[in-house]
Each structure stands twice: as structure tokens, then as C-alpha cells.
Length: 209
Image (cartoon, rainbow, N blue to C red; front, side, top):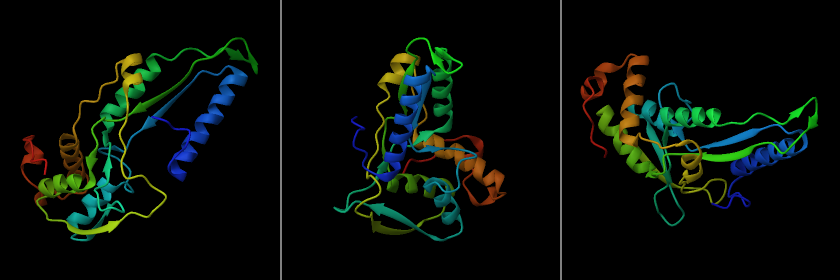
């Protein structure tokens, strides 16, 4: 995927960071590996992520906003479970080379790598909400609105071929399985086990929609 023309300010800041790292690598011989994470989710995740506050708001019977594109298509993300991301990080660490610079002096070209770490299977936000509704046994109050014309992208899909080639990165957790693990943690951590399906606690699979 071409990344020289970022589609959002967020993406532009990430690209700028990679360019600065590239320059530092070139000047000082510091070996660097950049990892691009795709919508990471799971236990102990960020409360400001959609899957997290959707869970909270659905349980509290509050409305949630679900964005659609300007032409009324569903927004989709390449949701990646935390365990898969950790495996990718460890793989990158295990294959990293030593820097070639010391004391501000570069002796030879140093390793510079950029990898995508995603699940490779984009899922619509609407389907994510459907999985949460089933796991929580609560119907969400959905407010469907259109995305702003700028500032975000409607679809993400990670190409992880380079990570697979270099250190065998291969995500194995689908969204339904990952969300079941997250919800199991969430209801335990916040003490609300009685409000969700028994399947979450005994390990039986839940429906995906």
C-alpha cells in the first residue's frame, strides 16, 4: 500500500515519525524497526477505543454512534487482538540487528524496517456491535450518522506479507473470539458478570452477529 500520501492527519503524523526515524537511522547508524498496529483491542485496552466504550454504553443502556460513509456504506476496521500484536512485536525483536553506530559515528548502513501488524480481515463496525450485543445480551441503542468528509478513513486492511516473510507473523484470533475474551475480562474487572451470557464464562462460543 502506498503511504506517501496519508489520507488523514493521524496517518500523516505516523508517516512523519517514520521519516524522522529513517533520517536518524541514516545519520547515526541506529537500527530501527517501525511497527504499524491496526486497531488493537483486548483486555486492559484503551477506554477511548470504540469496542471499549461501546461495551460500556451498551451495558448502561446509552446510545452509541455508528458511522457510515458519505455514500451510506459501512465503516470497517482491521481489528487486531492484543495477543497477535504481542507475537508480532516479539518476532520483530527476535530478528532485529545491532546498530552500526557508536558515539555518534556511523560505521555502516544500519537495519531499517517497517511492518504492518494487523488481522488482515476487516470487519464492519456494525458487525462488531452485533457481536457485543450477543455477548452482553443487551440490544444497543444505535445512532447511525455519516462520517465527516475529512479526518478519517472508512476502511483499513493490513498487508502483513513482509512481517510473515521476515518473522512468521500470522494472526490467529478472529473478532468474535477476541471480543469474547475482552468481554469476559470486562465484566469480571467491573463486577457485572450477572448481566451477560453464561457462555462467556464457560468458554462456549457466541454467535458472531
